[in-house]
Length: 398
Image (cartoon, rainbow, N blue to C red; front, top):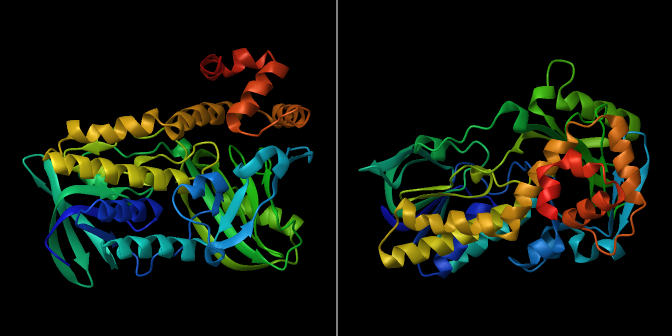
């Protein structure tokens, strides 16, 4: 490991990997560090991503695709099932990945592009000079190393310690942390080509439960509920165990994953002098679905592109790096996050009876193409009263 790089990336997930790969492709010296001993493990993700979303970053490879989806099902609290077939969703239906292999492939590509990669290497403190982030102190296998960098890209996940150490408020309100548990299960009867989402306050309060196939008789079976709904006797795991006992009593659990997912608005600002935050660290997870793979890769790549431009101009001040913050907020992704936040805030306040009504209404719509935006617009047409209930969201769609 050298003591000086153009860009230092902290975190080896999709955001960090795309940042490192892009920086190296731009001709920058780049170093990516990951605190865990292996890239891609443990998996803390349902592993789903749309085909269109993936296509902009990497060619699909059977080595890291566990299953290809041809449809989706939304199950209302009363058990009514609304099916979304591939003919309606087009290429927006996607893949269930094997993140352990997928993440490694992304990092391998970064390494092949020229980035240095170090695992079991933790950032323990930022290097700050005259108020500017200038690198980080790293701990690697018992050694302490100070690495200087023109720009540090923090891709250290939902915990986002590095941003906090640099003075950025990364706090997420308890009500906007999704408490999540996921089992990898085998020997279960499922449709291997359709994702299933279960809604309802009895099933997953202020959240949802999912079954994402990973083969003919295997799936990620998980749940996310609001942090404020979690407590003794009614934790996310309690709800999931109840579901599994009812739906898959003879299934076998071969892996258990727990963690938190932020479903809040993004950080007020994702840059500082010499610093950029990407992916989960920037709080750009989709607040409606909890999905974050695409958003992570998008912000990782964009951050490196802006960093390269700013380094070439000799200006890595907050003002200069704000080009990144402004660009992602103005993008389709950024606008989608704000829209989906408003939808999420509306849905979590609804009773099971209202959720039943909404799902039943959706099933009757003649959608030529499925998207969140199209769905809300059609719902508003069919239910004029929702214009008042959805308030600011409805106004933004006119």
